[in-house]
Image (cartoon, rainbow over all chains, first blue to last red; front, side, top):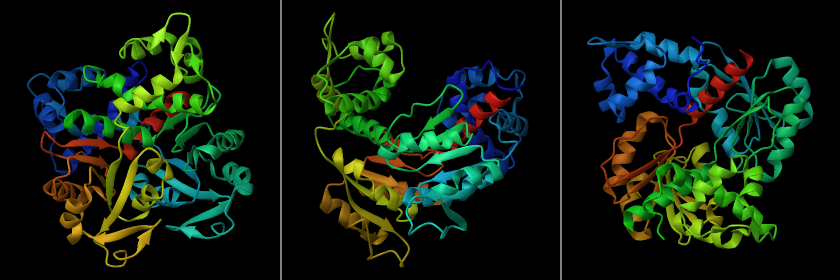
Length: 210
Length: 210
């Protein structure tokens, strides 16, 4: 089971299942029914059944889901059974906040270095992670098996930065700049568009208050 | 036109349209066809037509969309024709990064104060925004017409923090903690689950590289 053939929509929901199953596991719960999981996660039991049926054979009628098995399988499908090496481009507050997030390392996402153009920052360390000059990027990436580059830089710098990153051979970008990147087909981009998210909240407020 | 009756899926795509239309406007482009917008945004022209037809009368066969009109209307639907006052709970790196994001103020999201429990941080200022004690929360919120509270705190603290925020009368939460919040029905939460996003990227990497 490699997760291929599962729709993108279902895949995008897997991290949330993984999070809840991890909590249940930590609490020593071994089995859970779709109804109980539904109440916990506030989605319909039928969606849970539909989503989890994609994996085949996880749920048994009347017995519920085996929490540990489901947790492990979903983790494997999400690639969490291996570690990933990351670099962060941009050592400002956002880069530093990401570097200091212990939750990432806990899931095998290891931040190996920060990169910046600011001479003031280069040579220092943030949460124990060194800040390097952008000049050192190629050398560092080839020596450290980097899987993922994080763009924590302003939109104006993002496109050129992505180009630099890709030219080093990195094929996955976690993009925090408020712009969409043009990348070759074999490069994957996951966007965190904060302003878009804030606008969705703003819509909801206004649709409530009128 | 207040955006009511438009599906949640379409609403969630509006900020991206708004972003692209704003760029076009800045470049002095007055009209754009669904085909041109499709090439730019890398979604099908038929999805663009479907999405934008929700607003009725924006597109004219053979003339394309009026960029300025569409930009203004979408902005209005997203509530961007008014300002929103924000506070950030948590003055760590993430809180500071959000406080320093100039793009938010540019869209009318004004950060009025940071709040923390750390005595070291209280009384200082970050990007010109004061850091207050959590004790001052009620007083500050009632005096400053706060619409949105940002939770930039660890998952362990998030639930209690949300409770405090809601008890001050705030009805919209932008949640950066890696947990889902239990809130009353009239409170809106927009989540930015960073680890979930990173896991989606990890899935994609592994499904590419095998």
